[in-house]
Length: 355
DNA sequence: AAGGCGGGGAC
DNA sequence: GTCCCAGCCTT
Image (cartoon, rainbow, N blue to C red; front, top):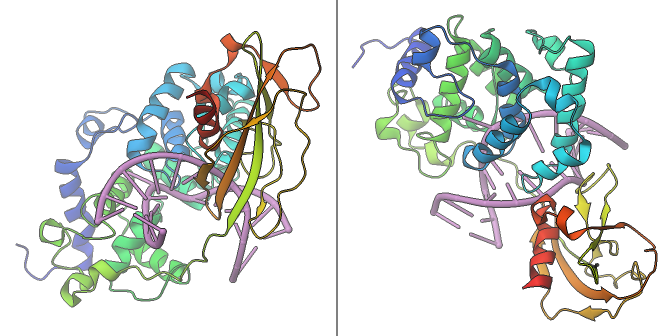
């Protein structure tokens, strides 16, 4: 153990831990490969960071692999059809990310010559890139000294300095503390090291302080408050809303679907025509079926929870056995319809109707 | 400054 | 059930 531990020693201690314990990830150039001279692909780093916003590594892994296989370079993605990208993103959530992913790729091709700028101020101007992602791409892809502050880092720093100020009020203090720790040498590896620490050892519920490389300097560990940090201001309860969707199938197997408006919930995604979703205290809005059919109501509802409300969806299923143009949406031929292109709540409705 | 915006895994 | 997650954008 080191005697007379100084603040200046902390980054190096963490980097030594990272050299041994860095997790394998498809988008990561590990410390050994980096030392051997391998450079990270800024396109891959950016892609992974967008997908990782509010999303776990385990969930992102397969999506990242599919996107990189289908669109290996930013030029390929910029040239893609919107519907193909939205369909490939289906199930990952926060669909504004997918719309901004395309906008960003096209901006990089049109205004930056097809290369991501190695500059924080230029990165943060791009669609879908905020303070965290700009710092992550600048440090991880270009090894520039910038400080990432995500949920992991907030937790690690709040514990390291035993900060009890609740989030989000504590953010400026946490950022100042985190920035003071960021080293000039290997800032990209250091950024990933802090986040790995937060994702593995310094976990939310039961941190493994006994094996933490920062065990000795950690103030919360000494005070016994680590599991209670960071403090957060309480969240509002989720209300319940309800609505109706109509699943119409033609005799040739085609399904009636519509593309939702770009703005708002599930924006730009495929979905079943239906009613508005209103608070359960109100009656269901009257909504005409999108087409004439022998409509039947399914016995069970679809239940789904979004960020800020619970949804109860009543499913109507109908066979269309005549020539008629739908009031809304368009029929998608059987061979052209992939249920995996649907956001999860719409796929739940499909599963209930077809099983 | 606050709220909208998905989905899945851990507990 | 609740909480959390490599946050961003709009108002």
